[in-house]
Amino acid sequence: MRAHRHRASLLDPLDLPDLPVEWAGRIAYLDRDGVINVGKETYVNNVSEVEMLRGAGQAIGELRRAGFRIVICTNQSPIGRGWWDHETLAEIHDYIQDKLLSEDEDAHLDLILYSPYAPWLGAHARKGNPGMLEAGRQLVEAAERGQQLDDESFMDAEAYATSDFDEASSVMVGDRSVDMEAACAFGVRGIQVDGALGVVDAMDSILMD
Image 1 (cartoon, one colour):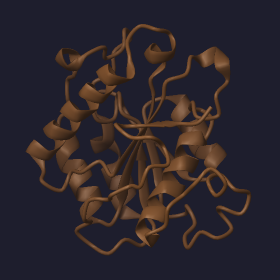
Image 2 (tube, rainbow, N blue to C red; image 1 turned 120 degrees about the vertical axis):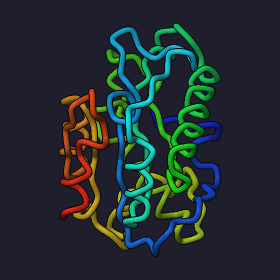
Image 3 (cartoon, rainbow, N blue to C red; image 1 turned 90 degrees about the vertical axis):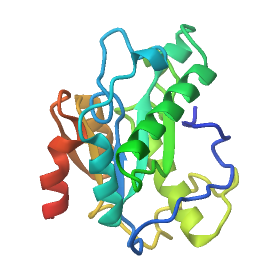
Image 4 (cartoon, rainbow, N blue to C red; image 1 turned 180 degrees about the vertical axis):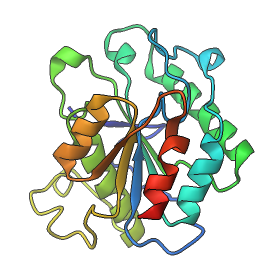
C-alpha cells in the first residue's frame, strides 16, 4: 500500500517549483495538521474547516530560502474509513497551498503525499511507518536529476545506496508521536512541535543546525 500524491499518480513526473537557492539535498518533511494548519480531533473535513496556523507561510518560505525542499507527509484515514473522498482532500490541499503563498511567495509545497489508509491496515505508507518519507526522498531526488521513476526502480533495494545525499541535514516536523516514529524509522531527525504553534515552533532548531 503506497503513499498517494496530491492530484497525481505517485510516480507521475514531478515538476518542482524553482528553489530560491541551489538545492543541496535537504528536505523538510512536514506533517500537516498541527504543523501548517490547526488540527482537530474530528478531522479537517472540508475547506471551510481549515484554520491556518499563524506564520506557517512565512516559515515555509524561510525553509525554502534556506535550501529545503518541502514534502508534506500526512495521514488522512477518513478516506479509508469512507467518510469523504480524495477530491475533498485535494480541495483542502489546494486551499492550504493558496493560503501559504498569500503569506509568502516562496512558500511552495514541493510535494504533498498522504496516506488514505485506516490505521488497522498496517500500511507502510501510514506514519509511524516511513513509507511517505521514503517516497518523498525518491520522488524529489529523481525530479532534481531529471529522471523518471517506474515500478521497477521505485523502492528498489539500491535506491538509497545510489542517492547523492543522506538524511543527516533533513528533518521531519510533526506534532505527534507517530511523526517521530516515522522519522526514527527513516533515519531523519525528528522535531516534535506544539500543535498550537506548528512549524514556527521548529524554526530555530532547524535553521541553527
